[in-house]
Image 1 (cartoon, rainbow, N blue to C red):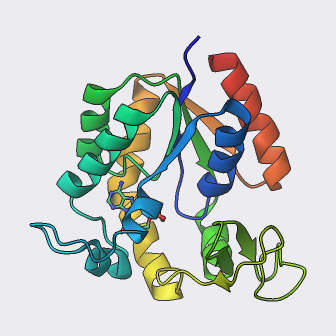
Image 2 (image 1 turned 135 degrees about the vertical axis):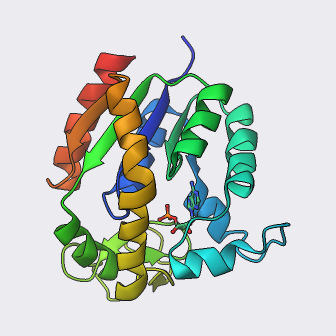
Image 3 (image 1 turned 90 degrees about the vertical axis):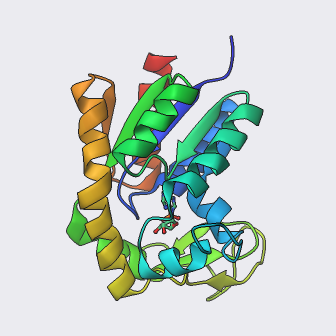
Length: 210
Ligand code: AMP
């Protein structure tokens, strides 16, 4: 059987990165994440400008730039978990045209909790592991437990940009969730438990779907 093709939806801070990592390791599929791809190419010149200006404002990078990244990544992948895309209906339609999905899962988390999660988040600059200054601190402040890399705060994890990212989610990405829900394809996962609890529910949904 070919490897599973999984779409993980959810607001910023819902745990998509953490759970995508679990999926990629357990099912040996590619983790395709537009956020990481764009952060690695923030100053890439495109006819729409560089991604940096949009990202630092918490706005969406124009569709043609993001669609091209996803198209190239999916073409090369034998199974994938897609994280951070689609973020609006036009991206969802583009995705429909280029692939078939085995599972669309939503990590459901209340907005009030997301602001706390995102503003306290720290990310390893080497391996991408996630921490939280209060809820899951590293053993040594500022140092990654897994690889010893330096922990940093993402430029867009400040309170002002976080609030704009959540507005953009409500306006642009909520319709994507409704779209998959209306098609009867959406599986909702409670994203408010511990990472292990969320993973247990998500893995059960994957086993059901593939
Ligand atoms: P993330 O790491 O998924 O939270 O994404 C960080 C930022 O990258 C977002 O706030 C957007 O500016 C940009 N971005 C990531 N994915 C997309 C996408 N699918 N469409 C447009 N912009 C995106």
